[in-house]
Image (cartoon, rainbow, N blue to C red; front, side):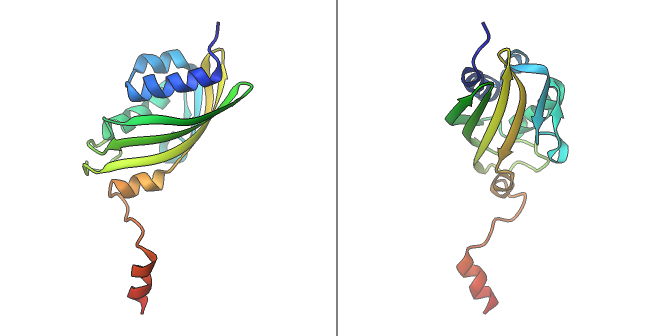
Length: 151
């Protein structure tokens, strides 16, 4: 019996992300899975191997990452998942030298599950916050500092 979308989503984040299981990628995603927004420059990652590039880069940069599933909403074969990722930037996987900075970002994913596997997922997560927290781009200045600098 195929797993329901909510069970697949929860297992996906626990096993593939929190436990770092590549076996879970094979088990819980379709061979031709489409990860919208996970490829180079925000393109689509098509197929498990293309997804693994994204997965390996993130897990290399943030080896202690933990994804907490905050909410799920299921309708038919789709499940919406609100997550919070917490980690420490300890590796080079993001193309930026390790900053040892703590990271906390949120995201919302909508996954389409067919026959107990993720067939397609639309991924929206706070990439700017990640880049700011690892010191790859400057963090915004508080409004009062900006205004005082202009006077």
